Image (cartoon, rainbow, N blue to C red; front, top):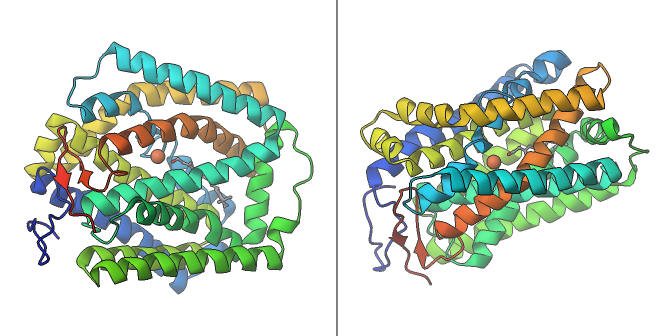
Amino acid sequence: MGGQNVTEAGCRRPTLADDAVRRSLVRTVVVPSWVAVALVLGADIVAPLGSLSLALQLVPLAASLVVLGVPHGAVDHLALPRAAGRRPGWRSLARVGGLYLLVGSAYAAVWVVTPIFAAVSFLVLTWVHWGQGDLYSLVALVDAEHLRSRRQRALAVTVRGGVPMVVPLLAFPGWYRRVVAAMAAPFGAVEIPAWPFSPAFRSALGIALAVVTIAALADGYRRTGATTGWRIDAGETALLWAYFWTVPPLLSIGVYFCLWHSLRHVGRLAALDPAGAAALSSGASVRALGRVGRDAAPLTVVSLAVLAASYVVVAPGSEPLSSLGLYLAFIAALTLPHTIVVFALDRRQGLWNPTSVGGGGASPTYEVGDS
Ligand SMILES: CC1=C(/C=C/C(C)=C/C=C/C(C)=C/C=O)C(C)(C)CCC1
Ligand SMILES: [Fe+2]
């Protein structure tokens, strides 16, 4: 994967400014996310995890309050200045804080006024956001040369975000319905409609996602053949389909959120921090990720205080699913501004401009020969 910058056809390959950082990120965040998901899938095949108690199935989602999940967004104020090669200051904190306050509270208001619409829009938002997270990993970390145009990249976002949001609906409609109802319930939701959970709708959605998945991979294969990047894309996509199809969704979403999406994003942020990038390239990857954790600590504490206050105000029921519903509504209010920041970061790093793509360094930098 690493090292070579020129393809046989003479095109420049996407490569991070510092290839050692990229290789280190592959080892530190990409491979561990495969291992985590494959282990949970393997465990479920050997001994179905659906028989675990609800409390145990909720452990990864509960852990996301303090480990990787909430903290991965609590560094948003540092990301853009660092990507521009500037030292973050009070101005970026005020700007990003203002964005969170404005957009987050507007979305919270939507949640109170129209909870079902809010819950469904959150599923769509997560689709986009988790897809954009994987696009970074594909393009900047694993040399996905087959994603050469904006259209192909948009398709990759559609597939990668679609799998976690759609496949659990195909395989576990009952749980899906319960969780969506729990998300809407704290704000006095009415009845959740039954049609999205019907076999007809689920089959149509599942077939559509399968067709888009195959079309996206086939299109990439036509462009470049089975390069390492294409094989990783195909392998990850197949792994995620199998994982979300098989593992009960509270568990699968919780593990994916912490150890796939958030871990990869924390790696991306570590590479933006000059000292983090230095630590990554010298093999001190735990130190690099630890720095992000330290940077994230203050705003993680602030987020948890706001969440605690919203528990007091909204007072959800005492069952675990009611608490989960409020937690997810709270994450939604954070995810909308977070997605806006990550889009700005994607643009800054050239993810939507395939002819000059920046990777993970403070002065980003690579070029791809477009087709
Ligand atoms: C828990 C759960 C669901 C929804 C989870 C969502 C929507 C999580 C979003 C998390 C985000 C956006 C984190 C930030 O990056 C589903 C799919 C209804 C299936 C049942 C279990
Ligand atoms: Fe995120």
